[in-house]
Length: 240
Length: 207
Image (cartoon, rainbow over all chains, first blue to last red; front, side, top):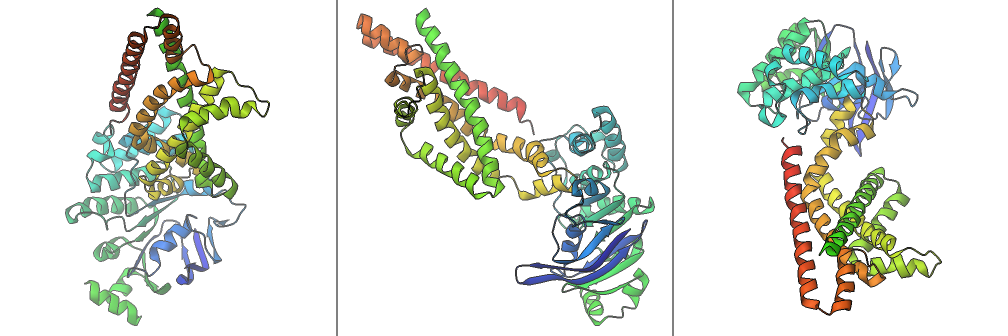
């Protein structure tokens, strides 16, 4: 379970998270929507401790993410994150990209790590590409590789930060299909996305962020068909 | 001729050693600069400034006569090696700094998000990419190191290519012949290094 309690975060004078309270249960798929600068991506990077927070706290399975005593590297093995930019490691082959962290962080043997990596690569449809370098992959393939790379650590939670935003439109589908598959597998996921129809299809709940505040949260049906908040309504009428 | 070739080996040996030491220090300095610890950063920056903005000859002099006046007596070999390594470290650090800028921060971030420590991300993700960007300048520095070894004659180095050439010249006065042959040997070594580096690069950096 991910528990976010009254989290505040500023970048200089700009407060990007103004007291967020949110709980995500095991197995839940939560999508976060909202305009740019609404704080939704920042929240994701706070959850796995890539960004410090100013006040409040975030607990992942009861572990305080930002506490000094927390072994953040160990905690991050539990929380996979995939970014908008694919961040492929260009000097490593697809297989090496995926096996690197299991070998170096989890200290698996090469054979063990490769077995898991191949399974994950097959899962995202990149089994054939394991020996090529990322520069030979399309954006969609690189992003699927990034997903496989995160999954190879066997995380309990997956965070997706606008993973289709940097893709050509015709490549978005293949990545969304991968996400859908993960959701169907029962993975606990928080997705920040601009793909509204996708959010409606896969989410258990949808949260709408506006200027650092979670303006509304509820089942997709409610958010998309009967939004209670004025800002949500405005936002949705603009994106549709 | 066999004497000259023996000298060439010593020259190559000093150049290689000075590069290894220089590279080691340059990586350390890169970490110093990234560490954000002011003393370490200042130390690295001062070293780099001096190494890049004073003559290599003076750096070798300092290692030999300069340290000598403080009671630290280095042999010509050690002084030459120290001087060139000092110079290499300065230039290589600067190369690395430039190369580091070419690697986006998001690479480290991606490594950290997979549970790696900062040092692991640096070593496994950033550094290999940095070495690729810095590889050609590194090759240039290696050639420069080979040529710098000839400055060793000024501190009494007499076993390297320049030192032996000098000695043979003093004995025979066949100045043009000996220096011309030595120059050709320097040229050949430098070329082999450059071509070798290119070969290594094409094998190592296939991505």
